[in-house]
Image (cartoon, rainbow, N blue to C red; front, top):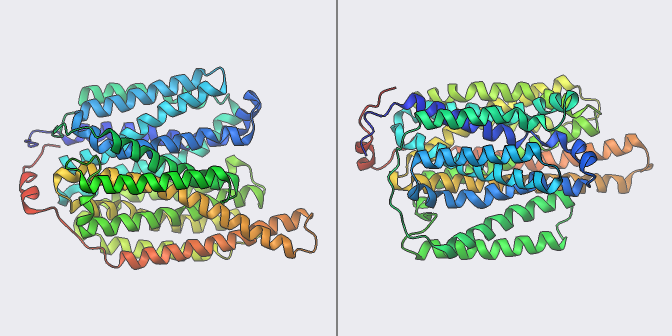
Length: 483
């Protein structure tokens, strides 16, 4: 396909608008859980399904996107994703009962699950390797900033308006995204329409869905021996092994695992898994510490994490430009060192820590993250030939979803175990001060494991280097597109 006359600017703008709307919504609803529990008269274990189902659907859908992108055009995928997201938002906004609200969230998740791999795949197609860093950096600006704005904005709205406004305000943004995409989004992918392997789709859905749900349930229930957790992980594990085997023996796999033949892609995928889990040691633990130990409100906790998120977002496009000029090593290694330093500092967390101290260390953490995430992903995907782009983006996005679920469960269980051990030796287990101190003891354990993961990521990062796709792929993309 000749991409010489494609105008990249409007296409990237459409992707950024759509991604911002979809990703903002992922973290928007969590702070409203107490209001939802009161209005619908439900328990916390029930309301948690609004988050769990969202993660579950995205985790099940993303692996199939590699197949879908070979059957449907770029315009169809983008507009379809945003229409689904819009429909889910409308359903959620007017939901008279909790069950309908949950259906709305599932439909929203279908849109988000389609959007993320499409966005990364389009960037890989329309930009040559030497210019992808800047483009991926712009996408990183959205991916990093939207989740941070979500809780703060949500806290402000819930404090002054109904929780339904969390959906009302998203509707015009989603409508604008659909309209903008309808006008400016172009078809840039090549349709091959491979055979649809229904068994692979079923194995993928049960495998990735079971793993994500199992780990998410372990985090929520606080027990790894719970039958739901055990059977979800067993079913997910068996299905996943069967799925991998089938992809290796079938002629037209829905997720082509031959992408792992490219060493830099494999290395970066492992790095992203470790990074995502390490990141959760702070993203999960810090709000809990601020609300349960420092006794701050949910809104104040979200506000404290906002400076780091904003700096992360601002630095993402800067890191992308620097990546294009200097390659990944000068960014990834210093970024991982900053992350290790920040998590090491968090290991000393105590009940007398100030909010300002947390904000400062969190900024260091997010600065390091911005130097690693998009440059590393771009490096890994750059090595793939074009026909593997949909598969590479699907693999990376899927495994990051799984890593997120594992991270939540891992660090909550470590923190809970550490807190229980502390209370066993406590002289006065009923004292509120001792309860707070027990949580700090659990956080010390959790951050120690987080530091171990960060050091592992640093070791992996030492082997990262600039890569390019095979020569025939580079020749295909050598035409200069208009901006």
